[in-house]
Image (cartoon, rainbow, N blue to C red; front, side, top):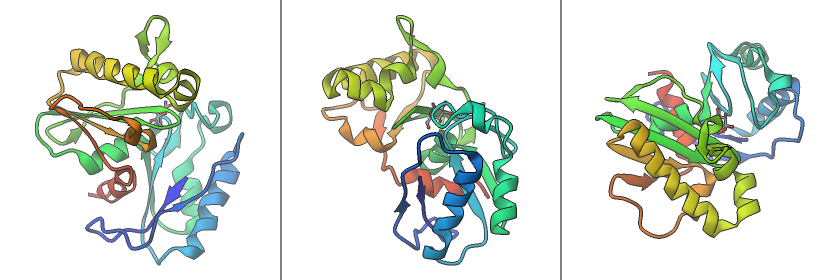
Length: 216
Ligand code: BGC
């Protein structure tokens, strides 16, 4: 879990703090972990959260890598508002990351390579419907996340994982005809070699910068 405080122009006012999310974390623990970071950070007025799952109106519907069984229907936005005493917005992490990086022209797609496989799509800068491509079939009977998540990289090695990332990019091109595709997330820096002209790697801090745009 990463946190920082930004000004309204998206300038970071503090280095990104990072804490490991405990295995089998419960919603209560997660709220406690977030609250625990606050004393180290500068004063703030609002809170934006990029959550690794499906979120509707601040309520978590799925959390594939944290535990959907524990998080399903948890009103994370409300729990954090109560705990922190500030207005809170919670959205899917890849959607938040996308808000930071898209240019606002044409069909722009964002994927994030980390523990899970995140994706978001924008049309002329407007966020499209959240598609959980992570759990959609990619190749053979495997999903995008089965082949491109961190567990797959550890299992298959960097070479094979990279080849699959490139295959996925072409598969997503067929699906969406994107004008541009951005690749973010912690593992994006492991992609070496040339990428197609309409594909670029974006900094992993973008996820945090997108939080400011959630309030635009
Ligand atoms: C989840 C997505 C999330 C992605 C990256 C996937 O497992 O289903 O909602 O965006 O991981 O965290």
